[in-house]
Length: 244
Image 1 (cartoon, helix red, strand yellow):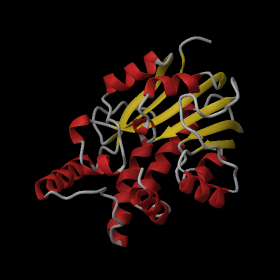
Image 2 (tube, one colour; image 1 turned 135 degrees about the vertical axis):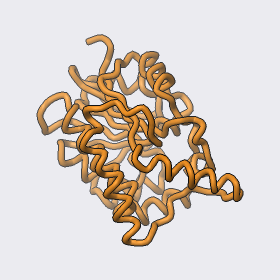
Image 3 (tube, helix red, strand yellow; image 1 turned 180 degrees about the vertical axis):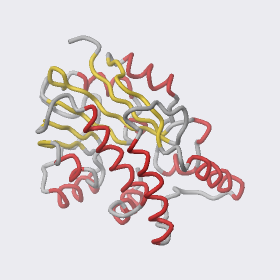
Image 4 (cartoon, helix red, strand yellow; image 1 turned 135 degrees about the horizontal axis):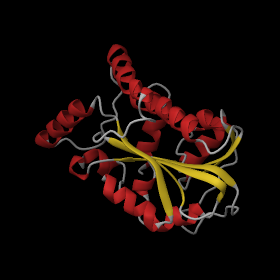
């Protein structure tokens, strides 16, 4: 992503409704699908500016990868962790068979070679280990936001399943999320297209609006682990190797 996008993320990721609510949803997914009781050995791939690291450290020891130098430096400053650089699928030295949980939180869509990247990570899982991924959904929602964030693609359930299958991983749970706000987000992005607006839609709303949006989005944590929602702005997938 561009330097300005990382800088903007660092400004808002502590309080913006999307980040705060998504962390609640991720926490529920980890708690429901973690392969064994904590503490876990966890790897975050593409940690960005480090906003998810405090959450992940609640569940165990965390390693992280971030290819962008500036974002990696900020994540290290925030977390005190030594974060690896490099690019998947072959540019990051990691120990085979080590991690109980590997997470890619809105990262896979940035990687040109998504299947080889997941296949490389599969070999880093310990016996019984799992991978948790969140991605943007519904290709027809492609907008200036995706361009600004250097997305390679948005996924459908079928395309995401195929990527995991081709990488030697089988789904345990898959669902859309960010579904309650789906009509509003579709309307806003359609308006942006009509008006020719460019860039990401990551403005910080007023405090009351931010609180309402965070509450609505965050409510989805109560069913994201038990239901497979057929629509939403994003998708979550939990998977494990097809063979042991």
